[in-house]
Length: 99
Image (tube, rainbow, N blue to C red; front, side, top):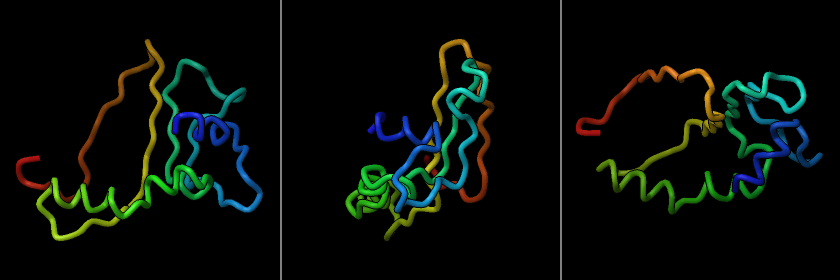
């Protein structure tokens, strides 16, 4: 799976695929010490899509959270190299009690 994201960091993906919604770091363009981010990489790679969109994953998430079902809003992949600036996390929207 990690290898599937490597071409996306160069915006090198199959011609018949869409681009990810966001690519916030590109190989050869950006500072190698910064955190990398790709949003909705599943749009550009069939292996990533087959994992992110797998119904079994949605069922497992819903079961673990105690929900009747689940849908993907977006996938967000971050790579943080050793020594990079800290990432300040935030919580947007609804929070499931107990999680």
